Length: 168
Image (cartoon, rainbow, N blue to C red; front, side, top):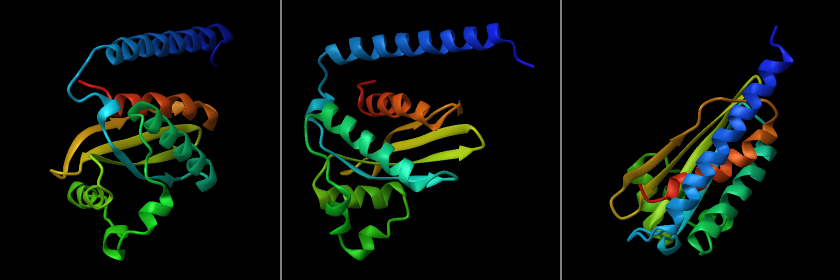
């Protein structure tokens, strides 16, 4: 049985880790870079729901799309824009080459795709960004399992958007 003290210590350790991560991210954003996220154009193909409610993942996807727009200072193509693509492109298998082709068709620099998975009370984010021109993976974000309520994913989605587009 886990004691209340252990839960409180675990909570504060997690909170402090988030604060330190956010401080690091904020300082990194202040540094100029040739690949500044404000210069990029990005398309979010979608987040797949694995073992959890589709509607909840759609809301997380909307939040993720808004975070990408905030970071890039550009509009991110909507699901409707992507639905207008040819049948071949819409049936993408998720490979980097296929995602790159979608990016070219949408005239964006990068395409983002991923999933939110649940197993019991643990959740995992798996998100990648692909360079549209080269069809190569730029970066992949795979979160450690997050335990607790699904609402715990909200901050993780925001952090994932930043980490995905931040300069190295």
